Length: 254
Image (cartoon, rainbow, N blue to C red; front, side):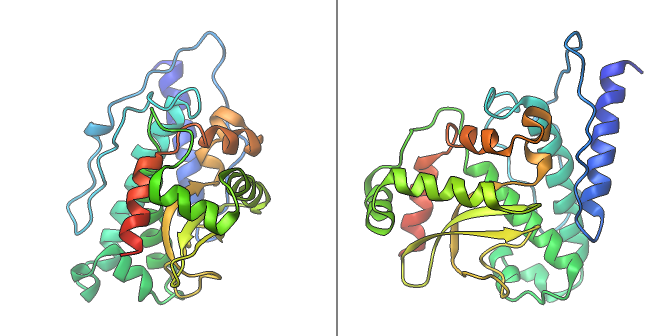
């Protein structure tokens, strides 16, 4: 077995142990390849969850497509290991229960937050699904039309929104997510959540419909940015799929 394969397996093993831990702690000391090593990645279409109620969404771009903002190895490990595991574990958690007949949104809204297994895996599945669709290789630098008007209405300007979103993401302590949501009044708000929680859950500090998701767990950026989370957050704004976010907003306010 060559060095690049050994490296990839060791990284995946370390991080998956972290994600399966009930305390949801992160492994941060990840060995990086030497400059001479070239690591190849696979095809996201080859990744399939075990048979169950929920399926992994098809990644709408290749692992390499978001580079240099998000590197290919991070994308592959994130999608084919973390997301796959959350999907499989969610299906196991709901097998034989009434939740098999519910949408993921209904499961989250009715969630018993003391059920850590369902809470972590349903959240992990939903959050990552939203995250993949929040990005695109070729994206506009700003939203347009209805969403653009709503951002100006609720934040004053796009630049103010951008600054507040980045600030929330930078200050999020430990593992978690940052969201742009539409609350029950139709107003846009920025909020954050710990671990795999999200604004649909009963315990959310600010409840609402998520339309934009940013993963700030270290596994989402550590291979490319190490401890420099702020650079990762800046890079995220280069790949936001504003067309998709706008569609979500219009659906949320119907």
